[in-house]
Image (cartoon, rainbow, N blue to C red; front, side, top):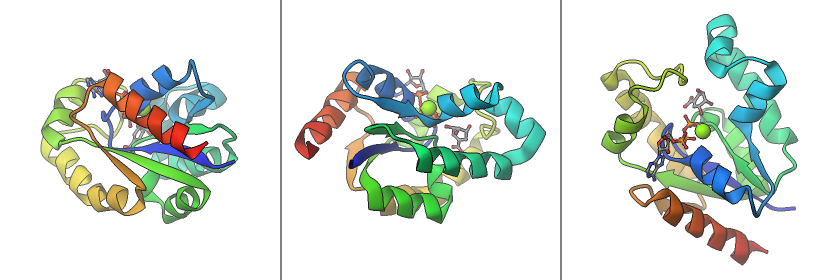
Length: 161
Ligand SMILES: Nc1ncnc2c1ncn2[C@@H]1O[C@H](COP(=O)(O)OP(=O)(O)OP(=O)(O)O)[C@@H](O)[C@H]1O
Ligand SMILES: O=C(O)C1=C[C@@H](O)[C@@H](O)[C@H](O)C1
Ligand SMILES: [Mg+2]
């Protein structure tokens, strides 16, 4: 079965949209599944095992997912194997949101271990930007509301089936 992968930087609304799609579609939220399977928060896991340990488990979760809609974490595009896997197995939908808007949403959130000071996060955003663009099948304008983004992804799902 061909899947829809939802990608984008932290704070672009992937989880929020995924929750809305959940009433109609089978949705696998990889960050949530990570926390359920490990019995600890991602922040706690990073503190104990570091980012590399997290990335290894994240790739395993991605490749084992059976759901029609897969909501990824912001760093899924860091690994080439993940980018290739998503491209080969589905439609990759990218929520492309300007950094200033993202920063307003995530600056004060203690649950994102990679959110440090603004300039550092902006550099991460800039480094990742071409990775999202390169893997995306569909680009959505991230200034849209959560409702609008949800509707756009529903359209992708309807057209695919
Ligand atoms: N398009 C939007 N309009 C208004 N608020 C939004 C929008 N997208 C996200 N938000 C808000 O920003 C916050 C972060 O969103 P969310 O957790 O869905 O991001 P995410 O893409 O899943 O990030 P991560 O990669 O870190 O998991 C939430 O409070 C959410 O309601
Ligand atoms: O952008 C990232 O690298 C991350 C985003 C979150 O969704 C989580 O997957 C984790 O905090 C790492
Ligand atoms: Mg999320």
